[in-house]
Image 1: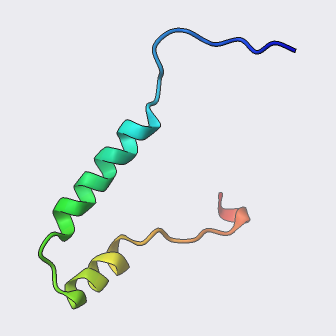
Image 2: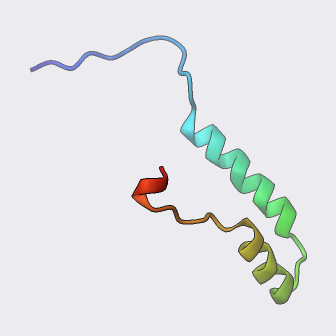
Length: 54
């Protein structure tokens, strides 16, 4: 069974997207104290959803 390789421009570049997210977070938390960092994580934490809410 042969696999075909799609050519062309990608619609979504995962590596580029996650790199920009990491850089944004890094800038936001630079220089924060432990308490400020924990508050940041609490404010920006993803909320869990049940399968019914999706």
